[in-house]
Length: 137
Image 1: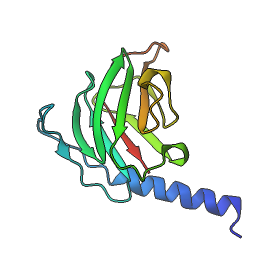
Image 2 (image 1 turned 90 degrees about the vertical axis):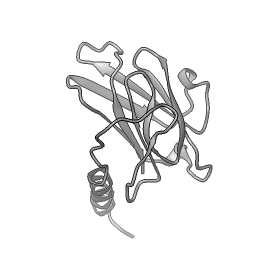
Image 3 (image 1 turned 180 degrees about the vertical axis):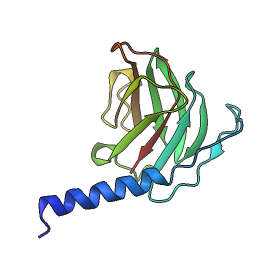
Image 4 (image 1 turned 30 degrees about the horizontal axis):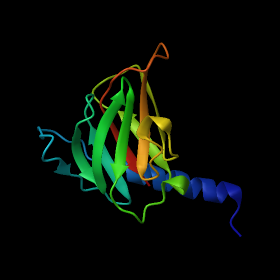
């Protein structure tokens, strides 16, 4: 049986490898045509604009801004169980932000079990719109 530290190291290495594969996307995309993300070791991923527009995707159906600083990202693959997934989010093109992301059903996203809720928080602890990437590992 692997030790806790060994499992922690493997998990950390897997997370680091997955995050390193998220490409820095350039160019523009329309709300009707999000770009396909080519990311290894990630079950689902999305690049989302501050207004909630889905810019790039892998196994994501849609995204929207629920209210200021709160976003819902709907996962398209029914085999992905968000209740036990590792989810990470990172602010893009903007600094002094904290983000939280959860796969648990939330009121913000209508208690949907196939949706990741992301909150973008300004440095003064106020919800504030910001672009971000999110990955489900």
